[in-house]
Length: 64
Image 1 (cartoon, rainbow, N blue to C red):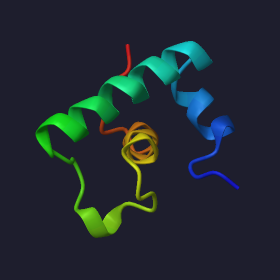
Image 2: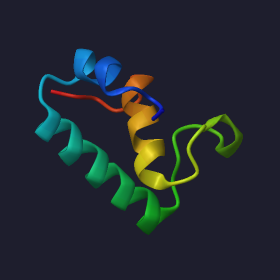
Image 3: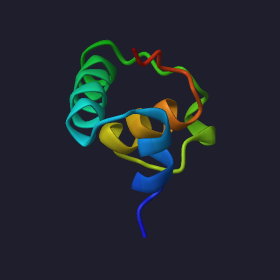
Image 4: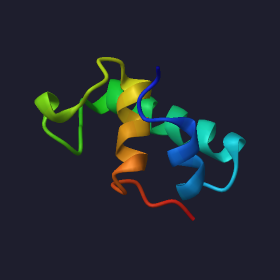
């Protein structure tokens, strides 16, 4: 099972396509700048795309 679930994320973001775009951009930022909004130990995911989705779920990324 994936974490966080797509159902929870779609309650925050109104479109799957928008969610993919947000997560991809944030993941790329993490890779380029090594800047994380949570402590490394707090993330469940090891990959940056999963970490970006976790940040969306926790409300750390502003979604318009």
